[in-house]
Structure formats: C-alpha cells, structure tokens
Figure 1 (tube, rainbow, N blue to C red):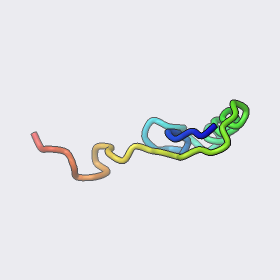
Figure 2: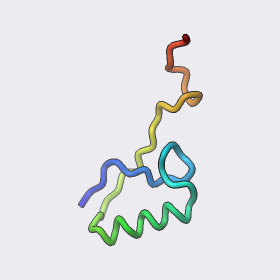
Figure 3: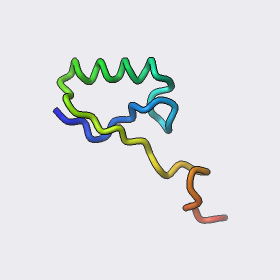
Figure 4: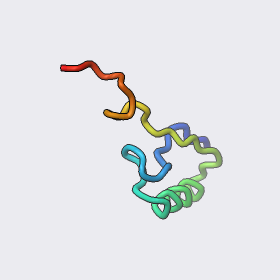
Length: 55
C-alpha cells in the first residue's frame, strides 16, 4: 500500500509532536501494510508564508 498523505514529520503542523511519535507512526504504518509513504506537511500555516489577506 502507498500512503500519499502522511503527517509523519515531527514538530510540523498537526502531525507528530516528536521523533519518537514519528517512529511509532512509521511502525504502525508498516504493520498495516504501507510500503511507501509521502511525508506531506501543510504548507499554508499562518506566519510561514505571506499568502493571507490582511483584514
């Protein structure tokens, strides 16, 4: 199986909080049959990029 939307990178957006949690997520993914995983953090967080309209 291929997971194309995994928030496995630590300390980014709503993904894992730390490396330990990321490794646990990776283990669970492998146990569930995932063979390929795309780490996909959000790229539109407020303050990260100036792409929000001012009020």
